[in-house]
Picture 1 (tube, rainbow, N blue to C red):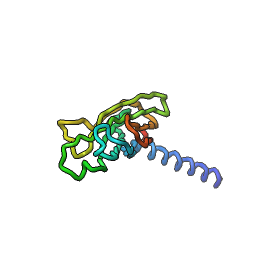
Picture 2 (spheres, rainbow, N blue to C red; picture 1 turned 90 degrees about the vertical axis):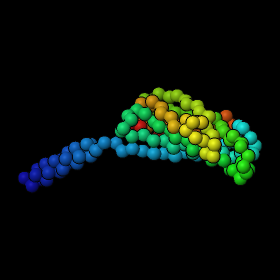
Picture 3 (cartoon, rainbow, N blue to C red; picture 1 turned 120 degrees about the horizontal axis):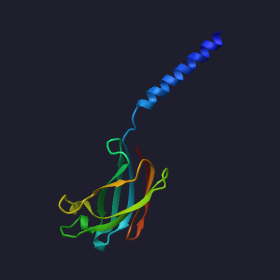
Picture 4 (spheres, rainbow, N blue to C red; picture 1 turned 30 degrees about the vertical axis):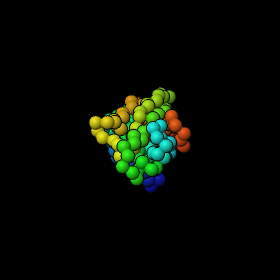
Length: 152
């Protein structure tokens, strides 16, 4: 009799915990990836560090948000010359759960020359829900980067 009571109590506890954990919605996620690349505009720009920040959350289901921040490590950082340091970044994405895939290309500038009237650095991609892998490349010599995130 005691074994039946213990088994029944354990089953109730497991079902109760599953109901509690199942009712908690997915949390927002953030993943960062960094691409080291050369600039397309001037050798004075040196190396550009393209930080790609990926966001997803329940407020925009099935959507991956990308935010680019670009910094220049070169002579253009230390002089007053008006040098436009830019590169073109392509985010090749694929949803590992659904098989959907695509690419999004954007020209991005180093932070010193950015402004809301010059460049749009935030992009939304409809990837659908699931695990999404993003491979970042540029059209100049670069060291690529990869990030993986869960999109609710």
